Image (tube, rainbow, N blue to C red; front, top):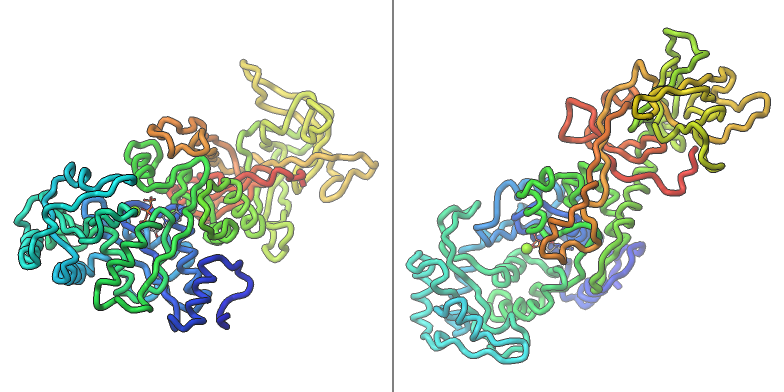
Length: 557
Ligand code: ATP
Ligand code: MG
């Protein structure tokens, strides 16, 4: 085994391959790449690929470059290029060298197409779409040769030049590889290598009238860049034969140390959709607020929701790399962010559904300053000032006239509870509005219970959070649930009709004054409520997006 393999990482089939290839001397060092098509924002599935590619390069002291696979002028956009760069950097990775664009290689692709024609391995085909389908055959039946397979090399060279010059209309002809119309792999039945497109390209403008297909462009791009291991998802398994065929038939690349493709299973997450086309549909139809809607599995959405880059990297480690397609439980993602935020998130108190509490035996016009730890397990994070006075807010769910059962460790009439970081209070009466909703609870406090238990041995089991009213800041809370009602909505043709109507609930409440300058995009733990992140799109108001709830086993302390 090579010396430079980090022992603590679980060994998967890709690491085995890398180890073998370094041990045998096939490569001196490894190079991977992350090759997004700039036709949407990155999602958590891409994070798996990013962490894999960049992570291997880091661990093996190799390289990983970022390449925009921009060979389709119709769907791509410079906005997506920028967002992808941002997301990769946010996740904590830096590409080696300059950013690459497949479009930079358009002249090269063209030269390699000419090489294939010269070797009698490619031809210009004028069959229309329906004829092409018919000639291709089926999985059970071999296809038949296109009549244009017989065109001479000279004529094909001339036809390709004409395609390039725009002499043919879109769809009139394509360049095809001359491989095998009876191959068991459909992608080897004379696949299209180039097609005509008159759209303007975001990098090359109107310079090109012909655009290479993914299969032709991808392997050549890998080879040009010196990629050793080209990692992609399982649906490209059969395309590997074409990947190999193209490189083996080009003089520049037909060497043992050319790039090789390996496939791993893609990430599928429950209760959401992941394909960029489907995400785009949700965005364009206004069913979500944008690509960075915190309910989406996009990296910009997750970040706005309060997910940290570390938690996403950790999630990817937890799910591992394999060749088995499966659905991943959302809980694994939620656990990863919880574990991270549990150690780093500053603690604070926020009342999401407020009712007033009047402490009748507390002096009017007095506000007391108390101190609370920013993180109970990490003293180094310091303390914050919180306040106490005659008027407070607590959460509606934390009061009941009569405790419904013995497990109810909250406030009820004649049932004491501790206010977190402050005193023990006891409820005496309450007011309701016309509909019977509780508006105000009247209570008394025990002044001798700050930081200690009642001296007469009374046991107070419950602890609830609160915010002092005169200094409280108004805040908006956005509470999220799963975006879809079904585990695998993407399977359904009308997935957009399966949206969960409760995926976003907005409430208005109060937070501690220490939250006045809460950092945008930073997650806090609102004690007993969950982790919330200050919305990065609302810098002039206090809007908090719920990242994830606290652990179910939370014990009220
Ligand atoms: P989508 O279906 O979402 O449009 P894509 O594969 O077309 O995804 P690309 O921009 O071409 O998106 O993907 C860039 C890289 O990310 C590819 O190597 C691809 O295999 C990988 N990738 C995309 N989706 C996932 C996923 N769900 N899990 C793992 N890797 C993924
Ligand atoms: Mg794609």
